[in-house]
Length: 347
Image (tube, one colour):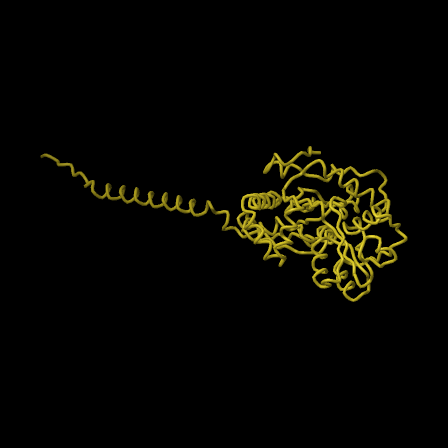
């Protein structure tokens, strides 16, 4: 008797294999699609909140980076906090009010660099006509020597104070011949308007505002090159999160600098809206200011000169040893992004 072997049909196996292949293709395609939508990805992560404190118009590049969306593209949600002067901005950084600050040299040299947890990442502008003196014509102030015997307001230890000292020295006025009235910078304009003081020395933004208030009764003294200012970008070294976001902040600022160079008219229009300045005031800023993200060796001479002035005027106690500001500079962050702009060696 012949036994016939029954061969099971192959169609179900083929159908199963086909189904498996299709499922694998769907999974692979799904993974690929997920990767492609996530890649620009990194934007789907919650942005890191960052506050940048600044004084006067030292926020030119941060302002452009904010308005152009460069911070957002770096995964940052940035708030710009105008502290009215650089000293408050730097103090805000040290007190934890902000993650970064843009300030001048005077507040930096008032602290001991060996005992204060901060570092310099870059300079974001330099201005060789950064401060001026405004006086009231109805108080007899028409020329520099008319400051003799007058009450001139100034915030102690900032660039306006340095400019007033140097201006008086250049025009032969002794310290005893002018009464320097120390007050917070946000009180100066009101004090001038009320007649409490006869004039004040401050950065351009406040001088422009006060001159508008006084109209034809305003006398403004300037002296280009007498007291330059650097907008110095600083952050804390004892807060890891701040150092981790430093590259993102710097990349956004470098992009803002490139925008200033390639689209100057658009950059001026943006700032015109942000500052409510006149066209002429914006042109003046462009003429006197170098808007660049850099870290040059010249920052050390600038800091040392500021330190010497502060000590000579008894504005800050002399440190046991002359400060070495090389120890508070971190060039590696900017070197990785814009190496040609860094001439400071690592410490």
